[in-house]
Image (cartoon, rainbow, N blue to C red; front, side, top):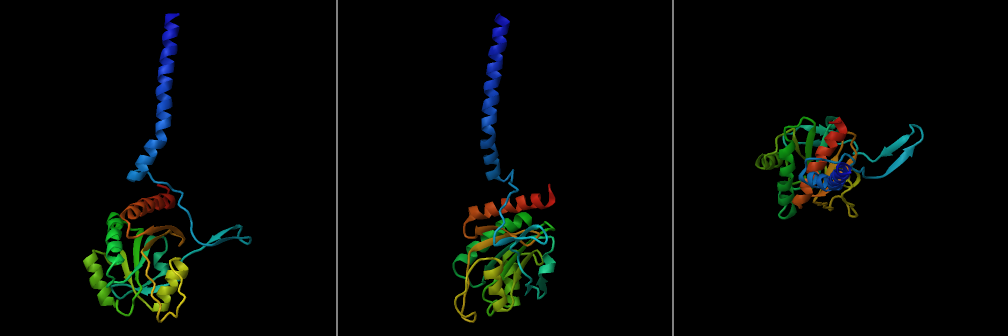
Length: 225
């Protein structure tokens, strides 16, 4: 009887610790997720969508064709981003307020992934008249942006503003394009299928940490590892 009672006691004791362990798993997971050791692979997909009966699948909003000039004077096209995950934002080099903070915070993410062959960064100027190729080149050098890894882009103003409004869903222009001035501190995460997977406030460093984790999650989703 005593042996049976002891066995029951041990079973109750071990059952108690097992229950505590099970209850602790979600807490530990959340802690590790915040630390960036575990990432979720269920990032949302933003933008309009519809079900195409011809192909029997959902069609999502994607980044349309583009052709912008980088800080080395070369043309970057959508086709060049095929198979790449990329982070995109809009800025201008003489911005006195939010851009320095946004670009500095973006450096944190860039430095984590600058050696990755499948991740790129695209920063597009909203003031192409003043942000010439030479200005962008100097700005990129001071930023530590490696050409062909972190692109600083310019181009015709209508194309840049159309990209901001219709592709990256960042702003709405209600004034003539010649006098319009879009400025957003939002940073956008785009997957290898050119779908938007996240929006992040570039002036908030915690948001950049979240972006860094989401880039990792997207790599896991894309590569399965």
